[in-house]
Length: 66
Image (cartoon, rainbow, N blue to C red; front, side, top):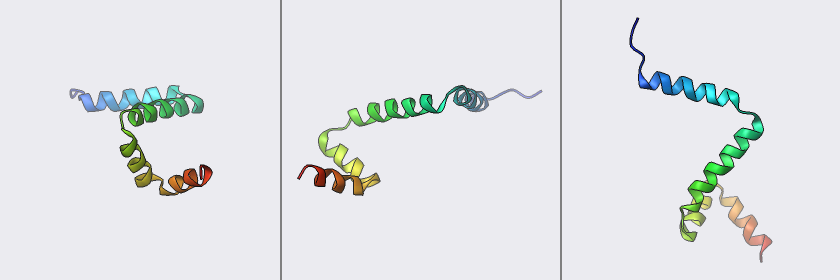
């Protein structure tokens, strides 16, 4: 029998963990991770991030508040 690698253990654990989660759990996890990431950005970096991934969202926000 060959030795198991860290990568194999990690991949199997992630897969197992994912299978334990409901859709609501996954949504909350995603929201939590996004907030952790976005909270680390200053205002300019946040706007740049949104422009890079969802430029139409910036336009929508500007229209809402103009």
